[in-house]
Every structure is written in C-alpha cells, then in structure tokens.
Image 1 (tube, rainbow, N blue to C red):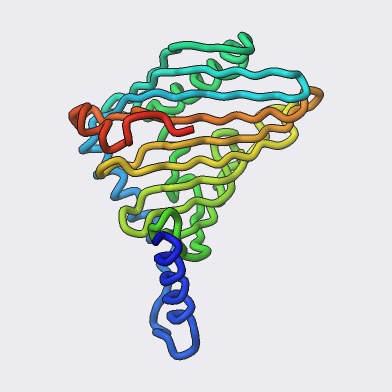
Image 2 (image 1 turned 90 degrees about the horizontal axis):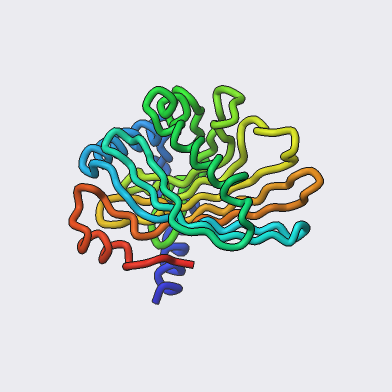
Length: 246
C-alpha cells in the first residue's frame, strides 16, 4: 500500500511539472520557509514547557578496536536550557570521559539563551535557499541548502528538510562550518526527527569522523521516551511508540 501511495504521488508530480501544467506554481523562497519555521517552532515550544527523555550513544572505532554504549538522561527546561545525567555505560570506559561528557557539556552550554540565539537556524546565522520539494516518510517537505554567515565551530553547512505542513525540521545533513580540531580531518552528520502528537522530537543522529592517527570513528545516538513536560506521560509514551528504536 505504501508503495502504491508513493507511485501515485510520483505520477502526480510528473503530471504537475510536465508541459501544460500550472505554470503559476512556485516554490516559496528560503526566507519565507525559514520565517514560517521559526514562527511554528516558537508556537510549539510555548506549548511544550520543556521535555525529558533518554539517549543511547553508540561509539565504534575499528582501528582501535573500541566500542562503547552510554545511556544518558536529558531534561530541557521551559526556557530551552538542557541538563544531562549519566545513567549507565558499557564497553570502552574512556568513551564517556573523553568524548561524550565533553559533547554534553558543549550542548548544555549552547542551550543557554545567550548562545542559543547565535547558533540557531535563523536568518541571523544562515542563508536559506530552497532547492526542491519532495516526499519524506510519506510527508511533503522542502529541501533547503543552508549556508552559515560565519565560519564558527557551532554552525554548520549542508541541507535541511522542512515539513511542508508543520514547518518543522525533519532532517539535517552536513558538516561543521569550521573544523573543530586539527586532529579531525573530516566530520559528516545526519540528524533526524520524528513527530509525537503535535511535537517533533529528535529521533537519531549518525556521524562519521575521520581522526588523524586513530582512523574512522562512528557515533550513533538513539533518542527515545521523549516526553513533553506539558503532556501526560501515558499519552506521550503512546505517541512515541513506547520505547527505543534501533
């Protein structure tokens, strides 16, 4: 059934873009999509009153024969400030102290308003260029190229996918606007979101980092049991599917 829906959609797209179709149709500009995205996000954040959930970090480095799994509890206040707590860890013991704890400290620092507004997806920090529209997970979206206005470690360059109905970010793919370290030769990441009720929560993050001497390190983050502070836990868990997705 899903294949039939996708096939039907593709037929409609081909028909709509063929000679004789509606020549008045135009994609919205990047600035328009970005403005709608920020407006809708502000509405969702005001209703959510923060959230809490769990993350599982999975790190692998084949050259060094290192593997680690780390479970972290995350809480986000109504003002957007994040807090983290280590729940458990297994495998390479140095992974938390040398890698994950530093990532969490940086993310917590960046969640404070005075820094967050300097790095968030907004026209102040990025240029937005609509490339095309399409279909992702059976939902229409806009694909945009994002260009950082400054070469900073906490900004990135790449592409974002914006849901055409909710104007929420559903996928981010790219690399840092500036290399964060001499030791890192290349870093690429993909970040996805999933909808829970009226809220879009993070779903997965996958990154590949080429490190001098140490080789390739892969990191996968699974986000699960995310619950809005304004939503009854039983309802939120039902919306999220009740557990972690591997």
